[in-house]
Length: 107
Image (cartoon, rainbow, N blue to C red; front, top):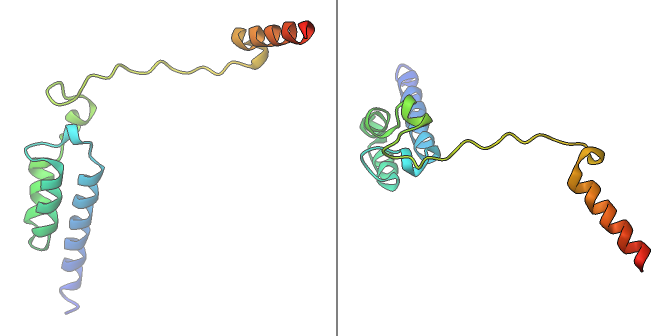
């Protein structure tokens, strides 16, 4: 039995990796089958490695597809970088202080 232990651990590791990778992959990037179908294939055929290997070969997005796949991904423009501005340099904050000061004087 101990001679089979490394093989069993490797099988279990590939099975778990494929399952977690499938769950973590966004719906729009999965190829050939819907995500729930891939989960079922991985779980049902995991003990014989057919499901996990099929996921890694056919279902998993390619490395380039993870960045941008024009056929499957919706184009999302890159977000503008957010620059932190100190309150005393922020014009909106200074304007709100000025408005609050005027309100307090009028009351």
